[in-house]
Length: 129
Image 1 (tube, one colour):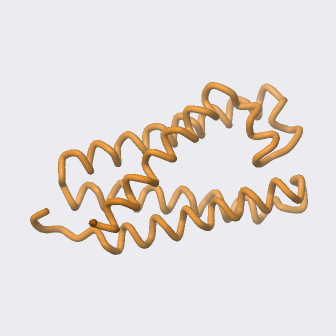
Image 2 (image 1 turned 45 degrees about the vertical axis):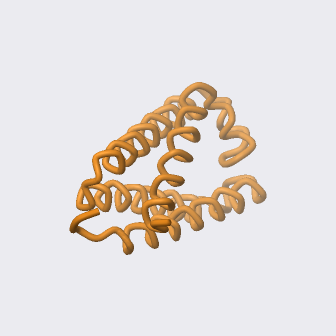
Image 3 (image 1 turned 120 degrees about the vertical axis):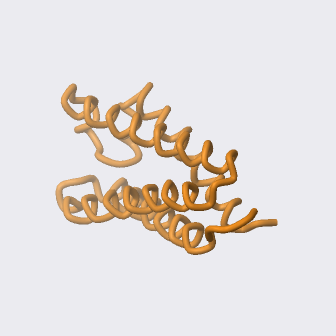
């Protein structure tokens, strides 16, 4: 088993599913991240936008994995990692204004996803598959 590719694939599939959920049902962010603010139309615009970002990142990574291009795979996984790190940092910065339980959950998920992405990216090397 190729652990970096397995992690990258799992991260990509998770991101597509997560993004599709936020795109179709932005109010889901109420229970998992930002609380009551997720009901507001402006917040739903941003949540859907993030959903599209996540679907695109996941689809791009899955395409790179299917093609077997290690350089492209690593680039997509690094994009995932940077996005997850940004989610972690901005949630941490706003944690006092977010529901405590949701903020902790979101930071935990973002931290875990950042770590998985970093491990996967470190293991993806250019060269023959």
